[in-house]
Length: 551
Image (cartoon, rainbow, N blue to C red; front, side, top):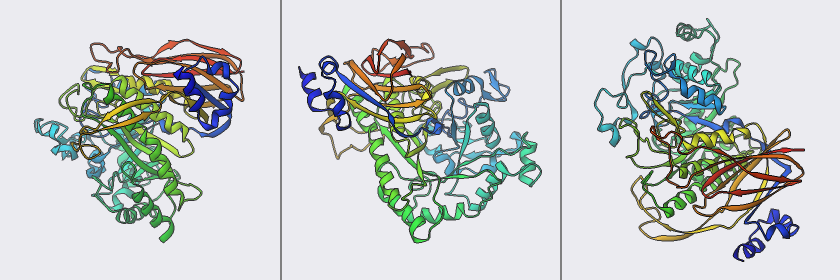
């Protein structure tokens, strides 16, 4: 009875007519999804499914790079299995070298013969985990074995485009100009082109995506918005393009700092206008103390935090639109994911390493759904980070290598890349929970001290896209115990067939280990198509994909 009363009163306005015309379905189903095939949003940029690598912990060394003489299978020093996995999910773009590491990185240290490259102090040397490591560890003192040439080669092997974050905090604009020259100047044209050729690439790398600084409000210089906008002007003025068509990503706010966004765009587009950036970077992490030791309320609290990404996107879009009315600049969410304290990393050298559970897969999946639903606003996303750090798709140490549940999410969602996002309305019972405000990994109490707040979490989340006759619908059920018997109506199309894939586990703490690498894996499931309706039972704490062929 409670379910029936819910369906009568809490359907979204955009799908109200659907519920009224389907009383028979409403009496038997827990949830309803309506996919409006003829109401497109925008093409989903493949770059939304991008990744991020930083010289931090075990991301580069022990993750991407194992060395040419390693017993670990490699392609010129790059971990072979990682390359194969990235190709399998059609990884479109990889960001490098940071992150905060980029803010103290001199790109010239990472070119030329490897045995001649200097050792430098790593940005993260004073991190609590790093201090415990010996002084000969690459986590404390960077050997520069992996530099621009190795990174671009890694991208090319993986069929991904490189996205390079430039050091705006501690290097001048001339150094940025020269980095672009090294990457993109024609063969035999300049001394830097000759150095690149000596490294094995006479042809230019044609790097398009360039981040102009990183977290310039914080580790990237603690600038004010006005100070950063001045630096952005200097770094992007009259940089040779070499026919590539450079796409600059400006350093946007931490989470929902609308003031940073407003002041930057007012300065560059109103006071003394210049060409707007291609992208506006946004970072949004969800934080809790424990990666494995958490209860149900902690899980719901993390999910609730993760949903803030949608409001941040909407707020940034409105703030940018005041000055950029035609929205030449779109959002680049180039750092996101759940972030916990130390203790579950697969090796002590993996600073900020953490285990990835079914809980993290759920957050990652509904974040990608948010990007899809706002495909007209978001042009790139970069999950932080690719391997051995924060919200990883992979964990590796020496010859051991596994994919986490996040990999399955990206594999399931790959069909959205380049497809047309279409409006999707979802009606499902919300999840009410008691959010106990606890210290997160940064220490302070969220909300001003220990207390509880009653919250309501969306009961089902998802997105849909169409490419030709293929309709892809992805659905996340964050409820830890309740399945959702779901009726899906396809408006503007009729179904020919449907196949379902589900990532689920009997325990929200479930995760893969070197000993049990397939403890959490996506599997086939049953869905039924009848005319313009699909019936599907969404398991609890799950991520589902329905591949629907339209007739």
